[in-house]
Image (cartoon, rainbow, N blue to C red):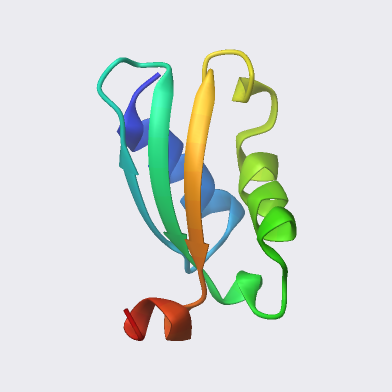
Length: 78
């Protein structure tokens, strides 16, 4: 598994999202996902939205994915 594939899958599942994925070993990854879809959602719900875009890859080819999920306004305020 590679970072580009993960980024593309998340972007396809969350249209309009800005996604940055890092990971050097092919199984452990970190992602920053900025999306309007997160508006009004708690962190767990946001993570579930991202995990849903990756389907069965989670727990399989993707052993671990550390997520930072933000709305565009939250990201801009950083």
